[in-house]
Picture: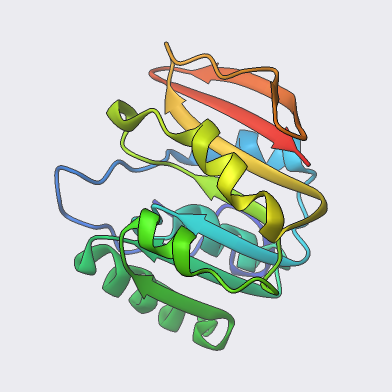
Length: 178
């Protein structure tokens, strides 16, 4: 697992060595960032961050700040370690908390431009999270949802419109825009 683009291209990332944490392959990540347009300005939220692969890729491609949230302390510590190794720890706020608590306590004035949602597939909660995050997203914000390939998300969720839907092996990537 590594950074595939931007100023840290080629840097290896430390993995979270737990069976409950799924890695996103370089191929899938490359496809996602190709769809997003390569450069990633603004503030990013990586919910269910794991090792921080998506969020740290966004930092490498120009994002100004990353909020990485995970309920697993090992994952949170891994994101911090990866950000430090990249020399980008000042652009990271890593939070150890369940997603529900994060969504309930998020500051009203905090706004995101890009969100990565990669929850455990069995939870099937991406659409619910989209609705809850709505007040905290800037206009035009994009949300990348990773699910299993059999989970087809709605074309419209609240004020979001599905702009891409692709299957990569066992994963489905669905991208919404506010």
